[in-house]
Amino acid sequence: MSDLLAQACSFLFVPATHPERLPKALASGTDMVIADWEDAVAPADKEHAHSALLEAAALLDGAQRARLLVRINAEGTPWFAADLQALAQLTALGLAGAVIPKAESAQTLQTVAQAVGSRAALVALVESVAGLAAIDALASAPQVARLAFGHLDFQVDAGMACGPDEAELLPMRMAVVLAARRAGMAAPIDGVTVDTKNPERMAADAARARRMGFGGKLCIHPAQVAVLHATFDPDEAAVAQAQRVQQALLDAGGGVCVLDGRMVDAPVLAQARQTLERHARAQRRLR
Image (tube, rainbow, N blue to C red):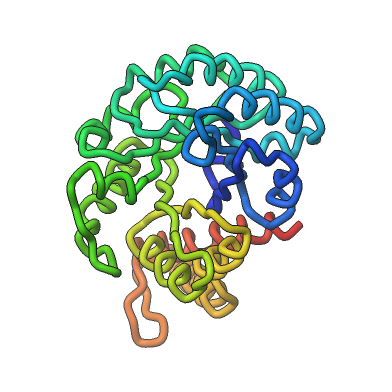
């Protein structure tokens, strides 16, 4: 499993039945692209989606394949077994791995891992009450690199009717963040913003995700990627302040010190280091 997936912030969906969109998606600046075999593909097109993606992936270079995930159909659907067979071919070509929708059991994740091989990473998409109840087991399952929260399906499963700010989902989002932390894995991925023509809403959703401890978001339109990065990537002022904090503690010999009238101790230093790490990842993205 690559550091690229563990550090990725943006995950852009592309329907696998439109493989001609893959190069554009990869060039959008997104960290990872998710070719979708699930919601974006009609039942009659499921089989064609396999061959279309295999043909398109063969035309990509190694670096592009390493940024590509596939969202398969859930276990229990008529397409799950065929998805695993096609997915194994794709991961053999160097694709990063798979997004597992409606993840509810570690056994399902183990089945996918065994089918696709040890090099493939998995993203467990929590979209149901049962999935949330099993989240610690999901986070600890073989080859799971990230958790993701599918808040739209979760609302339906739980019978919820959230307000515009989705305040009702704050406990569930925090549960996902804390589960990832308990498992010692990378910060989880928050769900999509469905209003693709409202960058302000995207920015607000991204800011909430960042404040809560998520490491990124799922995206459904290329225009959302830049907005997401602008929210998650530290600005120059934040980077400069983090560097000042780091230097102040270094000058103090590693103990507690005062900077700009405020106490600086180990937790403040840890936050500064996290800021500098996010800045380093942002800089690597620009190269």
